[in-house]
Image (cartoon, rainbow, N blue to C red; front, side, top):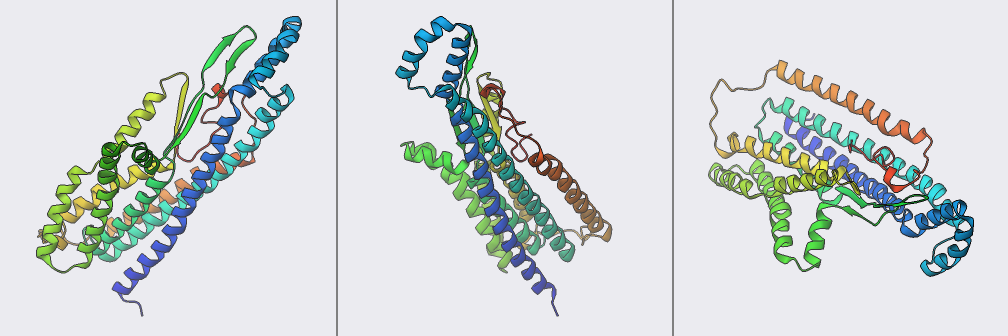
Length: 362
């Protein structure tokens, strides 16, 4: 027969296995969708769009077009009109379908992980009848570490610059540059580019510090020394002020929405950014619960006893509503979109969130 302690261990093992495969799938699928987006943006290059613009000019000005189209194509090494039209239509449409398929799989994995995480936390809280019990702190830390890993390694945003040049035959729009940014990738690029101070500080305060906090929290939940736990709780409360994870998120959000106001530059937030924000909120909550828990010697008043059945019941009702709402939203936003026809936009200026249907970017 399973005792309470054995049941908690079993739940932790089940969550660890489920979270591992879900996190791996989310990261892989999100990277797959952003890789397809990069191919799309590469297709809308100057050569393909220039070939189409030259073809329009030739149709409107047959004499001048016939004289200049040959030398221009040869000098700029432009593809033929048929090749560029095929790349900008069939190739882009196929890649857009890939984006939607990968995004749908990532969205379903994310829906499962979030529901599983909430279910795990709710069951542990119900068994412990407290928000500050050791098993609850352990569970919240496990969930926050899972979100942290996804937030670090999954793409955080897609940015591209598509200038539009007015011409007599119409606008010449093309993708000048594009980038997929992730938090780990940003830090790695800073370090490899020689910006050791900035990259080192970001690495220390946005990766090393969160992992240190998680490790110390795991230790406190297992240790029975109140003196040592109290000292660790003080350390966690102190280093929490020096964590730059929330500052990093704020900087990314400011950069993201500043780019949205630039006409030629567009940006889309991806799953990695949302999970990193989730980690920041959950980590701060866990630390606050820890410093007010009995594990670090905090004495609670008797009026703050165990949670009642109404609170636990409300927790599970909220969980049920969340699972139902997130499942319906994921089905309508992503699964249904796979079945719809995907047409390549006429220019990169028209490429927007409707076409690049990434999870939770809206």
